[in-house]
Length: 231
Image (cartoon, rainbow, N blue to C red; front, top):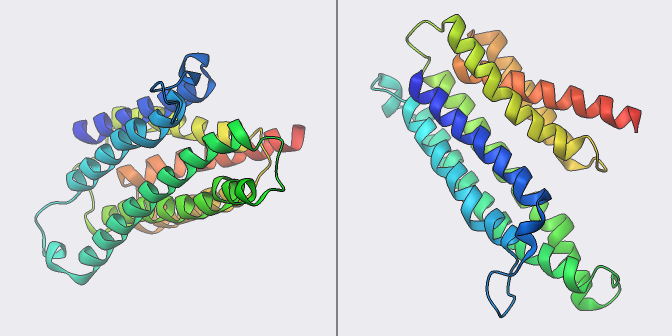
């Protein structure tokens, strides 16, 4: 549990850095004199996702242990889902951050030219589809791997508190992205993961990651819906 808490804390820290990176003015400067990217785009594409992906992989390895399940087909399937999901996340970041930069710099007032139409489509549509597909695959894989490898020790009151604390950071990240902007596909993605984690929590008991994801996604989802209603 100590390692699980530590890895979830890293994800919480990344969520905080993502908000600082997006909202801070210091990241608007250019990485190189040729102005190929701003620091905000560079950090979002290479630095922060890389930290998050490494933490997710280590979390996956932490919940897996020696058991007959390791040699089963389900374990292979969910590992493949995890790997494909990581690839799609990487592809989405590469597509989105570059086209978002070009969109904001050159196409903010031009949606009609062929070049800007393509840039805007990659920024606002295509990269999002790839991201959400990868996001669901990675997180669903971790949930179902937890289902294959149930935690073998008792979850203490302190564990519950730390899981809830880390879940608050993920829920806040969901709220920040859904609560104040026009809701699109992201709402359904969060709702799907909330339902999956709740189903597993209800059916398989209080496993650490079921608790974490259920708490985070429902907090973010309910908070976002309230914020949207009050807009």
